[in-house]
Amino acid sequence: MTASNVYPTAELQALDSAHYLHPFTDFGALAKEGSRVMVKGDGVWLTDSDGNRYLDGMAGLWCTNVGHGRAEIAEAAHEQMLELAYYNSFFKTSNAPAIRLADKLASIAPAHIERVFFCGSGSEANDTVFRMVRHYWAIKGEPAKQHFISRRNGYHGSTVAAASLGGMKPMHGQGGLIPGISHIPQPYWFGEGGDMSPAEFGLWAARELEREIERIGEENVAAFIAEPIQGAGGVIIPPETYWPEIKRICARHEILLVVDEVICGFGRTGSWFGADTYDVQADLQPIAKGLTSGYLPMGGVMVSGKVASVLDQGGEFYHGYTYSGHPTCAAAALANLAIIERENLVARVRDDIGPYLQSRWAKLGDHPLVGEARMKGLMGALELVPAKPSRSEKFADEGKVGTIARDLSFKNGLIMRAVRDSLILSPPLTLSHDEADQLVALAEKTLNDTWMVLKKDGLVK
Ligand code: PXG
Image (cartoon, rainbow, N blue to C red):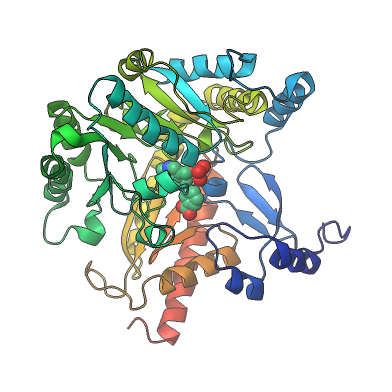
């Protein structure tokens, strides 16, 4: 690769730091360090411009569910581009791939979900949710129902409404928080459960929703929004008591339930949707990422019959994007879903590679640095702690140890992401058993290497 000099690393890095502003990045720091330039993807493997190979433990960014380099998605996009690369879905027009995709999504979703509004990303999906939900209550003659309840450390995207719905404090600090949204505690037992058992804590965290509904007044509350399992917040797998209690609370109160499926959708948790895994029925389900496995950008909001029938009575919904229902993206999504179905990837996560990786991942919990090793479906986390078995003792300068471990993991050829002082994982659903073994061996090496560095620096005893 470097021999042909198609990807001259130093030159690309210089241009990168001169002109390219990266997402969620300290621009000044990156300019000094230089970025890593990825040039090739094949299955669960990535190659950078220096020819280094990595096992992609993050499936791109929680999205490449079918793995990299699938020719049939490229061919579907190619054929659609030659036929009709783009046309809009405004002004009473439509296109065949978007229609077929809407039908396909209705068939794989739970029976009560009937329709879909397309957009370009997960953030746009949640902006759509914000406007659609308020519109819904206005049509129903309850315009006071405007308030959204979401969760601290939840992630719903980066546009203004999505960042406000999310519970990431540093994001609220830049650009502000729009009014009409409040955040309740997250079901993060390892970090916030105190002396409660996971089951008790799950109930407590869920009941915070009921307390918040009472505080705001049910007549003012439009919806509760939550990820089935928080991804960007650190793979927070709620205690088993959490979702049943949320379900009970939502049934008792007249509010909409929005289940953000942007990460959990399309097989990640061993069902088509995270809501299926936890047996909850969402009124709206934002989707993106695994919809196209990231081959082209596309998102959507899947809508229940109950909500759609009200929207049908509301006149024009003044909302939509140039790329809503983009035919080429829809063709890629259809090819992607065909692969997921043909290769049985959803059942594979539930019955085969999921349990296989989970049992090996759990053993990493024996490492002296790991306070908890958790995984559901194919999304997992390793909590790094200085003084096991204490859950309350943390490393000073939160995030530093996580970053050291993340960088060592990259160096070892395994891409994991750091959240605070934890390492998180979300590999392609096509991961083979042999690749899972390699992944766990690389993760173990990373833990050992991190331990050595921390010992040297006196951060662990
Ligand atoms: N909802 C959820 C649950 C997400 O995880 C979005 C919405 C927004 O999607 P878009 O397509 O607009 O990015 C996301 C995105 C990370 C990371 O570092 C996670 C996401 C995006 C970027 C980084 O874990 N999730």
